[in-house]
Image (tube, rainbow, N blue to C red; front, side, top):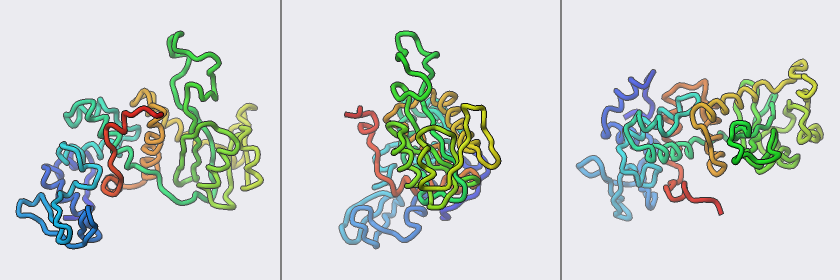
Length: 310
């Protein structure tokens, strides 16, 4: 069984993964791509039962299935539904809501919401520093005060307010990848720390004239434009690329998800960055990368998802 497959659309995908047996074989090929092992003790010699579903470790004698120790581990859903959900979430430009997913794969909305979050938690941003020319900007995610009922509006919450909105700092390498982080507030220290953590030394930084970027020039070559003065492009200096990403993210927010809780906001940001950073890749590679992360990632219990922060 190959770990990479060719498919052009959802129909091809559904035809290939026609049953749970095919999905399990594909999952095994990806999980054991570097050699077989026991998920309990990591021993490299295991035996497969004749039913084709179970394995037994030659050392600890523990029985397991190909799903044990993965994000799929404690789910009773068929792997085929999981694979379809992964495909739909990772290849839809603005994401897919739990209501849409529930209709597509025929599960309850609650189950689809849980699946979405588990897949989303595996869609991590890439590591490694950005370089060349990097645009930096911040945005605030949340519903507009003017669209709320009067009783729900927060006095004085306009523009850059963290009372009812969640701030996100982002940076994009022109022609390359993006990094974005949910923050408590867009202070000068927070912005500087994020840039230092994600951008290589000597990189040209482009931003607007927001006060939090005032000291960046002491650490990196820095140019800025003044949006307050109607200045959006000054030679090669602009923030159009990062603003285009914010526009995509907010179209997903308003048009698909409608709301995102502050608790889970980073997962949504990671989801959009994951897709964006693989925008030039083929569907099969995006699907493969997500499955790898779901195999190697930690499990995410439902109780942990719904638990309110202390």
